[in-house]
Length: 262
Image (cartoon, rainbow, N blue to C red; front, side, top):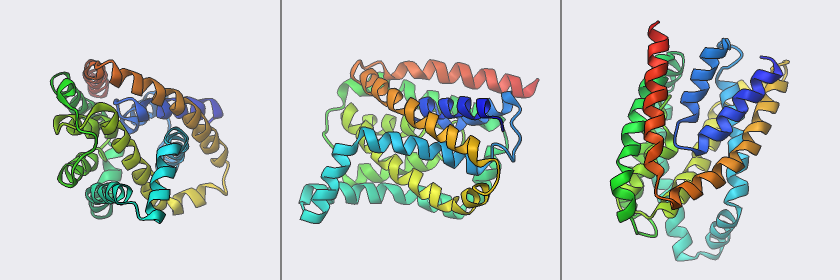
């Protein structure tokens, strides 16, 4: 993969990871349109740019993360409860990732599934037009946290937005917009770290080849663009127009499905 393509894919990842339009789905779409081979745009590169997004997340939510870490060591009940909810919500994705890893990888090698996933994402997002104004809870309950985790597990498929599906469900369950976004993105930190650990052998193998340079560039661009996308995302939630992304997902999904059929 040349450096320009790596930078473009890093930009796609950074922006689409934090807007509810599926970063994995957009990576599949752009790799298909740009003619990126399976070897060039394989799991190692995908994980590398996700690590760039992880850096953006850690920077954006650093105060909240440090507060939870301090609360953990101080045995603060509120912090311990929130960490426990995050752990509980992580279990469904872990179960899917460990038991269906080969099938998930196969899904990423089937481009049309990204288009279908975007149609599903749009359906989730349009529901927030009704649910967002009524959502006021400051944090999810344990049961709600587990349900949000199930939504994240579904988002393992390409085209199904992790942030879109988890936040849409959180809003439907009554969790306030900014609290829903925070819980979703803290959950995302755990998910990205877990995926990186599972893909560590691929990343180490790529480190000894020329593919390392595109991976590093893509990760860096994803980190920088991700910070901007996060700030934009929070503003859009506050404006209560989160549902507007549904129209984009439907249009992009339908267009890519048509492209795959031609």
